[in-house]
Length: 183
Image (cartoon, rainbow, N blue to C red; front, side, top):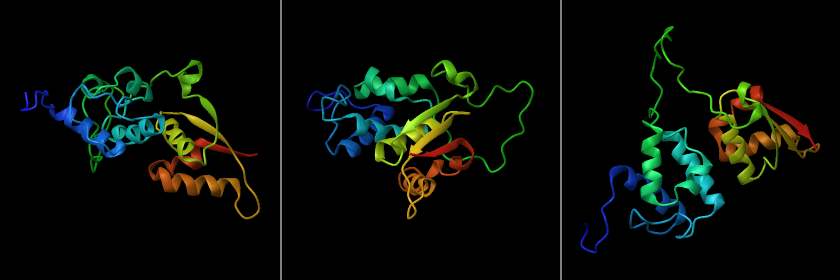
């Protein structure tokens, strides 16, 4: 216990508390602090999710609602398993016949067996760009985006600029896994 009676943070709780403090622009002081009670909302969930998925790629948006306190969320991250490596190895080991798949496919609906295809509108906004990024981080997922375009700013160029600005790590996936419908 600390001098003021609060439980101290574990290392994982400290990681969560620091991220929430940075995102919410308020001090997270106890393991029992609730993301939504201290001012969090859905757009801030998305901002946190993008950061957390760099270390814990299996984290979902639903985890924020199911595990809203620092302690619960940290326990969920521990349950999801080890952090993703900070950087890829210089030369990945060759897969063997007995090695498990590096990323198991998660079912997110009836079309998820082969990755599925999703229709997304609003991809050129903040939320839409982050939703597109989350979808493209799922193995095999294909996305059709409806994007406005004109002679000065073709739809594909508009989407590429927004993705490059908000979520540049998924920019390479645009060519192969995103179909743009001008509309």
